[in-house]
Image (cartoon, rainbow, N blue to C red; front, side, top):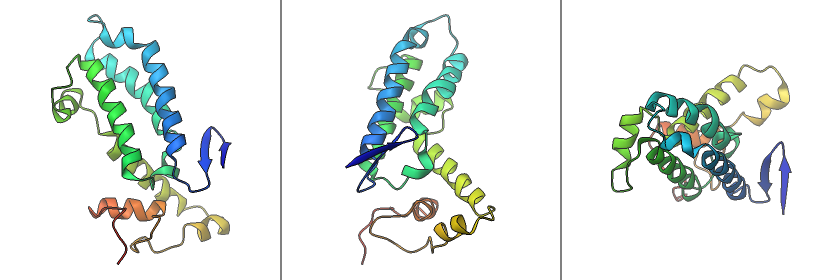
Length: 168
């Protein structure tokens, strides 16, 4: 069963797969509507990246602190979409490595951006005096859970640990 709340699709298993699919589809439609700007020689790379960062990327990362614990294969769909859009922006074929495109566009990979955004979000949560919020975020982020909690995922990311490794 799925429910939609504030534009996010939440399923029973909190897999976030449908929500991320919706985010990508919204961003895909928007990028298609403005693709003439991405292909234009009259628009500078700086302006193309500005358009991407101000219009397309926010559509993808909406509510990302909630879904950072999603399975890697689901999050990789976001990376794939971002790589495709950046290829349009620089006008390269798919045979050019993504690292080169990210260097040329000076773009932070979206997975890194989402993790940093979520880390800042959860750091701000610690400053809120509401006891309900404090109780909901009061857990040991260093523990490995079968289904990682958001701060646990951020901790594992910062320690270069796979957030979905097998529990001993």
